Image 1 (cartoon, rainbow, N blue to C red):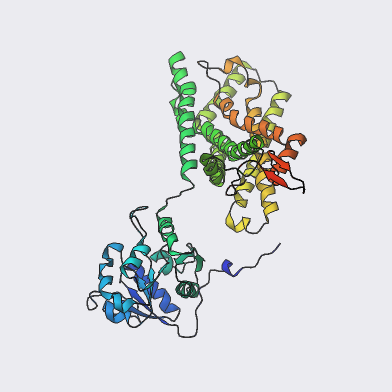
Image 2 (cartoon, helix red, strand yellow; image 1 turned 60 degrees about the horizontal axis):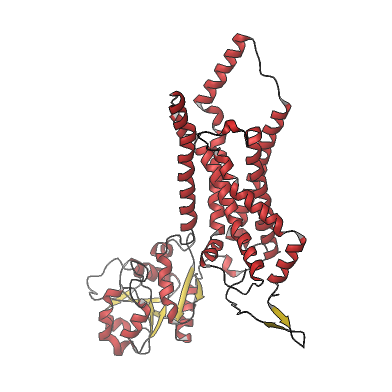
Length: 477
């Protein structure tokens, strides 16, 4: 499958024809950067400033006038000043009547004002056509050619003609305009640059909680207990051994949590007998964060691999092997080869390698550049079918690691089982429930529900169905 899109090439469109004149109010960093980019695209630029004589560092080729004089030279005016300085626009109401004002401002925090800056600007200058744009592009991105930054420009406005003219400018600059509708969308657009990893907060908090919990759990079992029981100081394990227990546990648990919300959603649909019912908000948010959960889990898996590779060069490991060799040589004894132990060891390593390979494959297909090149069926096959196979392999890797010690009473310390036993609870639960859901009798009903069938419906005389329960079409699986 081959897809061709002009948006895939981030080249700047340089026109040989002279473009229109654009006015920019404000001579700050963003105003100068935007002017420089527009000059490269053959636009004529005039600046409006309260102190035209004192302004400096302007791009070569741009002219500067007072606000009133600059506004008269163009019918497109970009407002590159902060909201608190908009008051001077009241004096220019007559000059700005019928002109297109492009608001590019942002705030210091989300929902800082009751209304958006663009709507506030529309109240100040009621005779102008207000368009919100360029607030998601930084001055650095404009200076670097937008090759290493987000090229999307969200645009909204009540006047379709004014909005179209601004979008034409965006395209000429080599950016991608996205029409967000009327000016009512301005507040949401202004909140975009202020959001700090909105979909990553839950995965980060959850992974932090998991790491802290299992850190103290492992410290109690592996460090405090030996010291209390036999005065043995093994605090050096805090550097490598403890983290190398926490990272695989966090990776496996987070991977299971990627697929747990889908299982819960399927159970809810079976229980309700319809897909036309809104999921709880927490489940909706959880399902939206699944990609981020998976990528964080992959990061922990990488750390586990790196920490495992350094085990042979650790001083403690080298000291232990050397002393064991000397002891056996002195006593003229040797360890007998165990075929079962060899099978367990090789199976443990093989399952880990295969699981990590599929884990990396899942992470690669999550990249936009890769996911955009596959259709929905292929993407679903990788993320769902291979995803569950990855979970099975990683769970089996942990089970085989436990081996004969898995349910041994000797593994209990202060009645606490090994950490990997606790880590298996969620993955095994997900896999067992998923196995039940794919049973033909259950899977057939679930498939019918997802295709629109409802349990609480009865056929009418003409073969159609009357829905007895309320339908909420705004949420589907």
